[in-house]
Image (tube, rainbow, N blue to C red):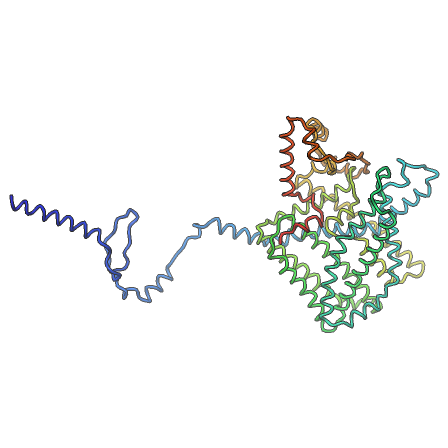
Length: 551
């Protein structure tokens, strides 16, 4: 019994000792490779000393180490899609650029082909007024007044350009150093953008002042001051483009081609100024339109440079092959810069390549809507607002350069001029037909048919009743391709003005709104605020968003 009693405490001591041994801290750092299983139990400890970690074991571990990419599948798929997007950018961008180029070409050819004929028809109508009488109480329709103003501005600026000595300007620019010419060329590019932004406002102000209904209260300085401002703008902008063309001509004729290389490297500086900025879809749309306009302007400048050089060498065709490498270098650098710039902008801002098809559909919508019954602007003016391309100064300069470079003498020469004019008209008509067909296809692919039949946005105060909205929807119906074509080829009609003369404030609306509609009015105001944050591409013109650009 005593032995058992003595044995019991000893067993308890053994148990306590075992617990202490089990809960004791691990042995010092000489035992390495100690780990736990997933169920928490510990295997037998294998002692490895520092001498076991040899160089060969480390090298073998590095050579046989593996990993699994599927553990981060979403990340690698995203990286692959980015690569595919960058590869798709050149193709989608050039589709947009080509479509935009032909849009600018159509607006540019309009000035040379259809605008003189429209001015002639307006003059004939004005002369035959005593026989035909007034229509709708107007001497001329608003579109005819705008055409006559454009024609008169071009004629006046063309004669004013005769007082500009191109030879003196060329030698004055050629006498400057390379650095000065590089700075001058950069300043001219900035000035061209500023002139384009303000010039379209000047022309629009003139057109509206000349065609504004007379029953309204006069709130302008008059048509004549606006007309002189427009003439001054077109003349100064034409001189600015002439200086650009002269600087480029000096670069082409320099012996070491250093100036041309520096001017082309300036395009790559543009990548630095735009790639590392935050861009939204609307900002990218504005930049794409600016690139289209810049590319078309550069092509016209290259045409002017070639004409001036061919005139100096007596139209020797061998000299054209001398200019050909430089022309190809300018065009290739422009295309390369646009592709690289857009590829990295879309990459850094997570924008897909499909956005360029949306931009193309938006430009197509502008083309088709300018031929609707409720059209409120000419097509060339809509292109000017969208892209910042104003064809009047460029057309005046090109006419001046062509008439000074090519001498027309004899009956055969005038016959060639007439045939060339009819050829331009044919090119304009064919280009317009193809663009119109492509535009209808792009609009149909983008499912924007219904927007063509919506009236132009007017300043509406108050809320439109739901019954009238539903009636208008049912009366419009579903648009078909035949109705689109019919509306495009029909003549525009004048709409009655629905804008109230007295603008009501929000407080007046809240006071006169019944209690049942107060909730709907607040909801509509919140929806309008939300829409202003997310603007549609069709509601933005070339210079609306410049103040809201995110740098």
